Image (cartoon, rainbow over all chains, first blue to last red; front, side, top):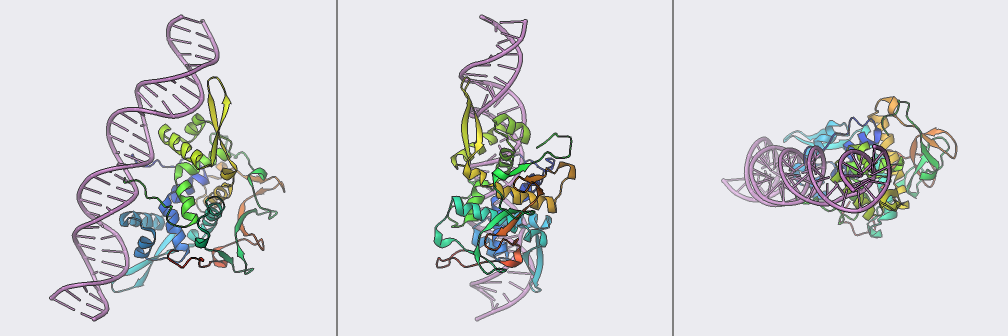
Length: 154
Length: 154
DNA sequence: AGAGTGAGTTGCGTAAAGCAACCTAGTCGG
DNA sequence: CCGACTAGGTTGCTTTACGCAACTCACTCT
């Protein structure tokens, strides 16, 4: 393919985010990272991803400031990949993926790993809510307003 | 490439969702769909996507039950692509993308299109919350529990 | 000394992304 | 009624990146 088109010029947060995490492997790497996977070979074995592709994705994520490398052994030098704050903030995205998947493409129930909310102690699902009134969103009660820019682009 | 690896056997909602929407163009097509874009040429012009790739993505989305085709003109037959309920339910995913993008890769402010919550009337941001206690989630207060299955996979 | 481990890198073949040109069915202006 | 235009694709070609296996490098363990 002729170099995947850059989306940077689409002045849009969704597009910019899609540029970074809009890739199947990246999403799965992040999922594993949230589950505590840190090492190259563990990612590789768990996902069955090609090693060169994994190396590529990890370095992109590090460059993007989503993962950070940390030395966990001096001799021989070994490092592991850990989520930065920026990376951890992607939790919402993964929770949203998960909830949609559970609803519409539910895999075998036995494989669902429940989420527990430590604040209230309950098994939970994530719900996207309005930061003002706290009510859950759905497509009927959300409207996208025009941007301040003199138009041009959605 | 040797056919992008299928993720179906990874018994995981995140993986299944990533299989469908873990692709930059798909994300952007959905964004446009939420903004009201319905026609082939409008998607094409807005995104600058190659026409064959657009055709491919649209038909995948239709097959996945995320978009539906609807005849809006008989002669000549013309149809448009609209979000199904399943598709509309992806709103959370896009809101999560958007929020993260605004926070960490904020584009020029003038291009941000605010979201209005029609229930409370305010300009808002989406926050992922616990469906039990309603509190916002973050990585520190969410724990993934083991699945019921006898292990095998994260 | 030889096997093993962790973290990649290299080289190869194929499929998918990008691009432009073309096609089909119809409408419209003159 | 001829040519131009529009909407919605399809075809053909080139380039890139994915998947796979094999290899490297540096160090440890037995």
